[in-house]
Image 1 (cartoon, helix red, strand yellow):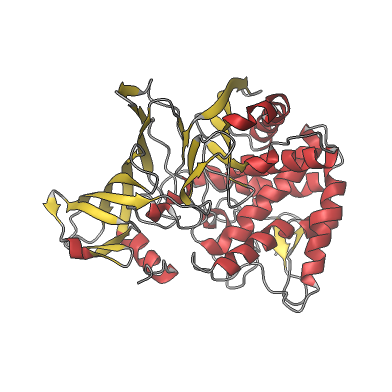
Image 2 (cartoon, helix red, strand yellow):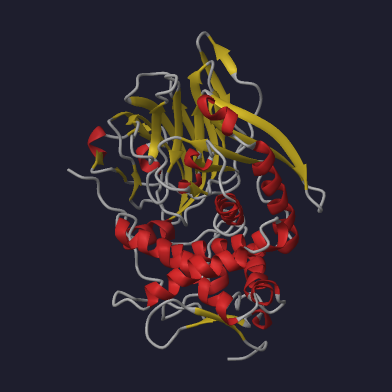
Length: 474
């Protein structure tokens, strides 16, 4: 049977019932080419002792499940879920399972480089593939700290969201890598990159005085095309620009970027360890347009470190907002912080035109809609709509005024970050719940005078238009 779907109704009830404190996840990648051992320890609180809930896990087999030290019947694992009953106020769930590698760029991907036979693995969980790698509560609003350990062949390099706690402990032909605990993250932000990667290390100090370790990784056969001079230059420019613009330090301990094979997207914003398709490591000379595109992707994913990772959407219907914010910031920072000063012209000729074309089709509709993680077509549509959703804003107001004006969107987003840094991190903190799928105010629950940048609907459904209004206007 296919695994049970993750639904908004069920996860809403689970979020009401539980608070997840931390995960300890250990992955053993020293086995065969088909599967790996996964051990997940989840510590969580229950608001109603005695209640029942479930954890998510899609695996080849489950070896052991215990809840608060007591064995759980293997029959409790069915249809991608582990049924849990008789919860205490404070709980510890331990699950040992055999999980499968994937070959489609999701879950735990395992690729063999045809150039030299070297093996490369990495994780890609958005929206709901973490359950194929370790047992968890798979939903973006149950954030928790992750302590990650990986056992891998001794000649491999392993990266994760946080720096390693120390040198790997080598035992024969294997090594155990242990990483520092993460800040509170949603499950889809978990990242492990393991294999014979070629890694370039550097560091950067921002104008605010924050020192950030930097890393670039790719497969050995592409090391000659890694282009660290260009990639690290744009990375430094982006970190300087965003930390100044957001008036807030970079929120994680390092900034790694891994270029991986067989990736299912262009890039994804795993906290502290961004994953890229290695198609963007150019094997020959390319035009400035392609270099500008790569810089835009880099700055897009970097913007997510603040809006998406530090502050996280409660549910997938805010994916469009997540992407629109990052896309807008990517164009703004490209134009103002890099050599690509014509980024807004590129944006207008590309994203903006695309957005208007989409809005003229019979299929036009509100950018926000109820979405389940399994509804891949709706998620892809929201991703597209989010990325073009920033386009009309550029057509109606100067970018600097819209995003950097004191009463505008960015101010509300930054204040929302400060107010949302605890367990309830979510985009809804600064947006509020509205009856229509249109953002009508920004950070109104923080300070009303910061709600002047508003998204107003066009006549009829379609891409929203961001308009500035005087402070206090209704």
